[in-house]
Amino acid sequence: MLLQLDNVDKYYGSFHAVKGLSMRLEEGKVYGFLGRNGAGKTTTLRMIMDIYYPEKGEIKRFFNPDEVSYLPEERGLYPKMTVTETLDFFGEIKGMSRKNIRSVSPRWLERFDLAEWSDKKVEALSKGMQQKLQFIITAMNNPKFLILDEPFSGLDPLNIQIFKDEIVSLMRQGTTVLFSTHIIEHAENICNHVTIIKEGEKVIDGPITEIKEKYGKMNLFIRYSGDGAQLKNGMEQKIDDYGSYAEVILKDGKAYAEYLRRISQQLDISEFRVDLPSLKSVFLDAVNTREEENEK
Image (cartoon, rainbow, N blue to C red; front, top):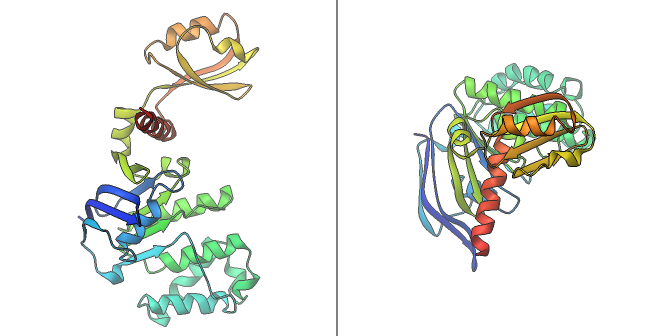
């Protein structure tokens, strides 16, 4: 066990930001903390870091303060420092020797395409470059526990992939990673375990494979030509139509053969497959279900 939250509540005045939240984190895994903007993700991470204190509940930490690194959503660097000076400064704060910092820095800078910028001041770096530098100074000491608040925000697809690769690499070296995001696709391929919260309250929690099996619905992928209106054929379904292809969820998940027979009479089908449910579909279903319950 690395971290345990038991029935944690947090208020801002009369606003109930986090509601009876319980979580368990084991060592050596990647945990996704998912929810819409304002769901309570950042508040929870700050409570884990002892920046905020819960009004109710208990947080048990099975790690030392120097074994955790935290990348907050609101970040800041010293603009007049060079990249190398920044690495030295934050590395020493984390207890690294100057020799150790200089031995690991080249690999990190090369991996994040910052090697040619090592002698440049931070203020000369683009916003994306500064974000990569912030990730490096957070992870360069290979912490036991790494907490990342919206680490992919504002990154292009190439740099998102670099961040994902580094998170997986750190996990394989024994680091436990907890990261928050409201963009579900970012957690799809790298998380072992996800917790989904809605308005401060946990709605789904568990290993990602079990969550998909328990809460997911089979998705149909259809590539077609013709009138997309023909995808609606009397069978109850949800359709995301993109013009040349569509993603369909049938209410009766076993009726896809009959659905294919019907639409193939009206459309030219070039590809049809049955996919496992996506984490995104599970997330949207969980959030929409809770919203409907609150409206009753």
